[in-house]
Length: 478
Ligand SMILES: *[C@@H]1O[C@H](CO)[C@@H](O)[C@H](O)[C@H]1NC(C)=O
Ligand SMILES: *[C@@H]1O[C@H](CO)[C@@H](O)[C@H](O)[C@H]1NC(C)=O
Ligand SMILES: *[C@@H]1O[C@H](CO)[C@@H](O)[C@H](O)[C@H]1NC(C)=O
Ligand SMILES: *[C@@H]1O[C@H](CO)[C@@H](O)[C@H](O)[C@H]1NC(C)=O
Image (cartoon, rainbow, N blue to C red; front, side, top):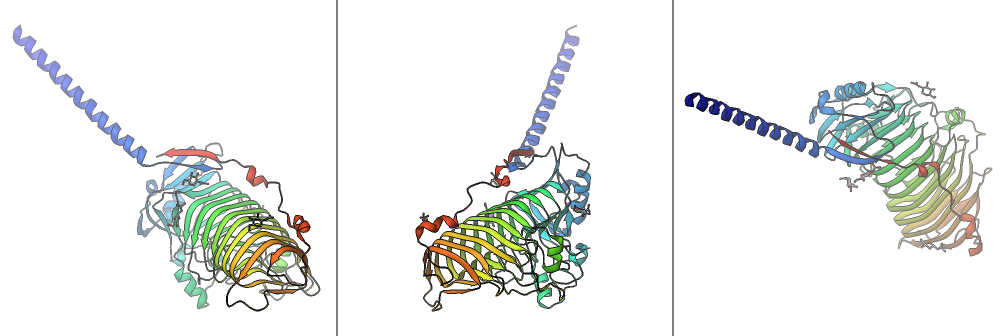
């Protein structure tokens, strides 16, 4: 009886022991699961949050900088395309170097880059499918035939976010720049991010390096936020424009830092007869807190492709350092279209060739068939509250002889000339306008009206619809 009792007790003890072990192990497992969750949780503000999130690693992604991930991106995104607008989806790119060719986004979708994730653009031309030239340009910029699809591309989409905790997209552009200089390109170089015919776009918190050509190109699109972007390319790299809103409506560009070989922001809307026919303007654009370094180009350029028209551009709190020009309007006979209702205030410039530059004879035509009667209309251009230092020429403002550029208004602008500055700080032809409180003394075509006329260069006091859009706080753990 006693023996039996003893063996029973042993059994109970064993059972308790086993149970204890199992619980211990379980708690270990759940602890490590918890750790995993904590290590990959993140949040950001987005136009929309997504219910479904997957990692590139789950689709065969290899972040060694050598293996191509084009197929991994494509299969992950194709898998996510089953989610509808209610749920939405997100592709998470973890830390690593992810070599890839061009891939396309979908609607109701977020591409998120970890802070140590680097997308490396492939230098293998087979990774870049060729598409038709843009209808508003009639041909490619580098070569007539077609254009390589952008690294991150989307067309006819709605509700798209490309963001990250300042993750990096490296275009590895040197090979493309070489081919451009050697005139070996069969097609126009790809951009880093292009969204076409799309609506509700957010591109934020990323670093873009060494683009083959332009960096960010929203085209024929609307309701766009571009925020917290760092763009860096060598100052002599060809056509590495920073951000090019092209035939877009209701766009906000904020808190961007750009060093590049071409214009930091270039506002566009199609080229000559193709742009006129397509007739899709860029309008309602606000640019805030932009810092630009571009020794051979402009801080903000309007044109030269402006044949669909550019209207209602507001820029404020802009800083330019070691940059060729502050605001530059570029156009030509044959462009048609217009640039009007342009407002810029609170701009600070250091070490510039020109503070203001308007060129009416930019040339550079899509082909010989442009309409010699298609004159651009340039009017209501307003600059105020600016300080510039170390400037070679205050302004070079040249309209077109039978087509003067009108209603130019400049007020409260102080330009300190460089030690080696040109004798004549202002050059003006075929323009009309007024100034007040501007030094050095403007050209005769821009007479000083006294301070009561400062009102004429007023900045709009209303807000654009894009400023009313509130971002949602999105948090994820995967
Ligand atoms: C940018 O990153 C910061 C954190 O550094 C985050 O608070 C913010 O929501 C992000 N903004 C956007 C527009 O992605
Ligand atoms: C995209 O939208 C444009 C303009 O609405 C249309 O002309 C074009 O056919 C569409 N493309 C696709 C692939 O649906
Ligand atoms: C993002 O990274 C770039 C490049 O390293 C850096 O210059 C920039 O300051 C970073 N931006 C933020 C907001 O951390
Ligand atoms: C003139 O511009 C400076 C900034 O450059 C600004 O601080 C000042 O308030 C402006 N003056 C008026 C009268 O608007």
